Length: 116
Image (cartoon, rainbow, N blue to C red; front, side, top):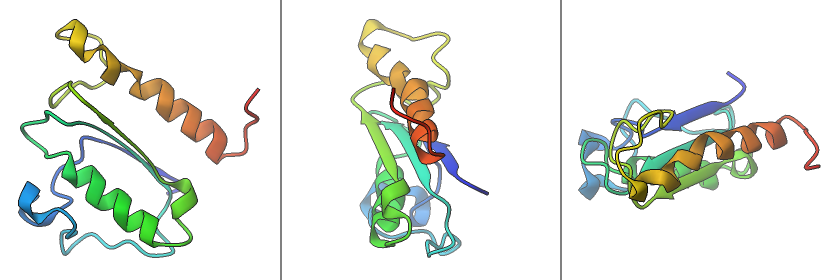
């Protein structure tokens, strides 16, 4: 693939447990062939810890070929399953609903679009 877009990714860390932050699951490898990635997560996600996104982002940052193409957004609220935000559960979750625009901006820049 040319890129990956991960929204509240599951099981990136061993055991999908926050205490394993910094350790990628054995089946996930990041190297110079890994495509650029954008990750979006809510810090109050009770299903998939936000550290999943951080662990993968950190691995991308460690790969010289992927560092420039990595983007991560962690929002203070939104829980798990905010999707495209068709039904925001409360005004406090509005910030997480910005992720599609942020992803579009990232994709536009990744593929050579101007910033005009």
